[in-house]
Length: 114
Image 1 (cartoon, rainbow, N blue to C red):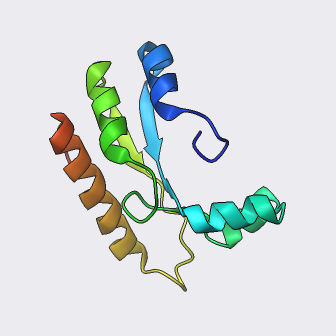
Image 2: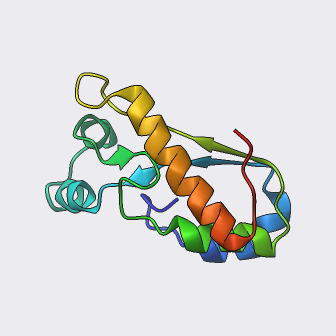
């Protein structure tokens, strides 16, 4: 949603009752800026690393977790790790994502079971 220019917090507030599970990924703002400036395809953006795990990009997951708390969300939160394993160790990236989401969730009064 953030990649497409949507407002995640407003969407969560408006449609929160319909959220059954959450998939998270982060965005590298510098790559996104280049993608837009050079009119890359979605695939080129992915291959150039526009997406990453939570905590390795620019999305404010603290605010998002607070919005989930506000709507009473208690479902799954999944970390999407679309990393090239030749460039980034998958386990390390998953650990970065888990740490970032756990910290954001705890600050919002939510807990994440691993």
